[in-house]
Image (cartoon, rainbow, N blue to C red; front, side):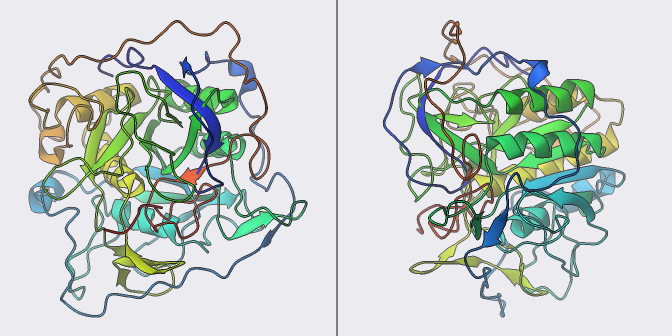
Length: 440
């Protein structure tokens, strides 16, 4: 990808992943650990790393019941033109999230496994994974007054439940949420071994000091370079409970996000509003590659057969917004590109999406990377032109000892995950992505 790996300078300290406990204070600049293939998780049937139990009732969103709400996240894209070229048939997109609930507009969801409880991945107590899945592959429905539909409606989905804010470990009754970078690494390996051509990760581990996610790095390397899968990751959110603690405002970040900082292996997606303006909650960083709409999202109801525009929170309901919901749009685009250009490698697909984006006037920047994706351009037969050179921060020398100074265990072993989505501070503790962004 364009200059991948040359812009990684980051700092970290306590880890947040997908909605976990509050993050800790800042520390020093770091680069991701070197890839150590010996740390790749071995192949194994998906299962929780320890016994768990459900601690909270499943999310029950309020469905959209009228025509006063319209889907806007795809409004800027020419879907008829896109779908004349491809609808994503033949592609498998793995959704590593909170699971995918059964829905009439999602056909043939493949069971990928459950790292949270005893399901098979096709259960979603949090709702986050179903929202993500709908953005990728929900079938059009002429009876839906909102006009919502997935960008790649003929792509198949692999459902892997890797995190949840509704479950917790039996060994720690005070812990809320389950899922961390260790189970995420296992899930990435599982998705790659199941033949996923695209892997969507809408969960983020935020840290302000060293983070030991080397198993995840090995799994990402395996997925991309051994199994030829495109890995798309959310950039992360700032400002909510369990989200990243502060915004990166300088060339050298004070907050890192994993898996985003493994820039050689993932396509990291930031969020913009409907006009293309960077979302205030979207975490900046030298690893940001591109951007997509991620505010006021409409998607599938995880508890019904319709669509939703809000999710329940401790203080009521909030619009669905977050980088978690920008990422699946790009995952769907990756599936379309792979369907139209089957000879392209995973890295070539990522480069095509970057180079055909609407580049910022000054070139690459830390808020939107190479700019907002342009699906029609990415699917064009014309060769994409290189991205204009931007002033990307240079990575500092890699530390001689990549191991963390102390363990950062959160809900299981390893770093805990925060959802990069909105459900505004609702429950975002594991790797599920209810989007914990403050309501507008």
